Every structure is written in C-alpha cells, then in structure tokens.
Image 1 (tube, helix red, strand yellow):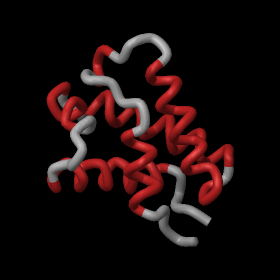
Image 2 (cartoon, rainbow, N blue to C red):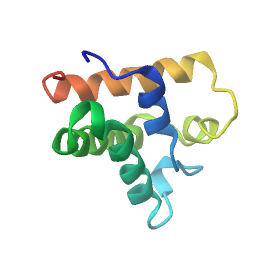
Image 3 (cartoon, rainbow, N blue to C red):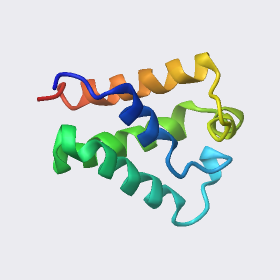
Length: 100
C-alpha cells in the first residue's frame, strides 16, 4: 500500500479536534493522537504511526488558525480545508521518508 487512503488520513486528523488548536483542553490532544495512531497504525505500523501523528498534531497547532480548526467540526468540510489536511498528511509522510 503506497498511500494512506484519504478517508484514513482525514479521519485521523478530525478525530477529537477541539474548537481552537492553540488552546486544546487537557487530554484532548492525547485523545486525538491515540485515535490517529489507531487509524494509521495498520498501514504505517505502530512506530511510524506514532511519529506521523505527532507530526500531524504539531502541524495543526502550528499552521491552522483557530477558525480553521473550528471548521473541522463541521459535517461537511470546505474543499480548501480538505486540501490543507491532505497537505499536512503528505508533509508528515514525507518527513517519515515515505511509506512502506
């Protein structure tokens, strides 16, 4: 499997996100990370999934505005936000040296 299915990536990114990335309530970041690892664990393996999800959380914290993170809770995500999530996923996968 060369690429994570988009649904796995997006589900990993959306699971447990709070309204503001900069002010995640205690435990929420950990819940998100755990859900991400569970989703990405099979295609990446547990060690790589841990690193991928740490990267994902860090990039959401760094790169997404509070309004963008709040928009992640919408039933239907705007296309530009989906593209940003895919970029985050790709950047983190590249940081791992790809998959396989």
